[in-house]
Image (cartoon, rainbow, N blue to C red; front, side):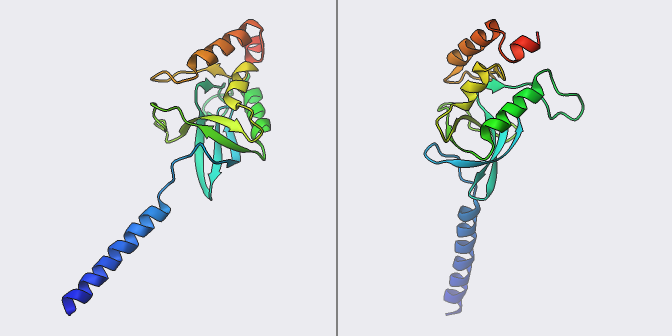
Length: 167
C-alpha cells in the first residue's frame, strides 16, 4: 500500500512538473495570428506581445542605420529610420512571415521574420523601398533576397532616404 501511495505521489509530482513546463514553455511565433507591437527598439527591431510574453523581432532581410549603440553616436539617417519604424508600428498589430529553411532566431535570440502590419503593409519592403533600410543578408540567402536587392537598387538610384543623405 505504501508503495502505491509513494508511486502516486511521485507520479503526481512529475505530472505537475510536466504541465508546468508545457504551460510556460515559449510558443514559437505563428503566421496565422496577430501580435500587438509593444515598442520599437530601432529601425529594424521591435518587441511584440505574445499573450503577455515579450518577443523580440529583427526584420528579416533589412538593416537600418544604428541608433542604440551607447558607445557611438547614431549612424547617418538612423534617427529617421527609427522614427519611421516607430510611426509605422505604434499602436498596431502585426503578423509574421516565416522564411522556411532558415533559422527562426539569430544569435541574440531575436526572431528573424517578415513583418506585415494589420492593414497589409509589408513593413520590411516599405523600409527598403523608401530608403530607410539596406538589403541585408547574414548567412544563407532568404526568400525575398532578390526582390529586396532590386528595391534597394531603385531607391539608391533615385537618392531616396538614406541614399540621398548619407553618400
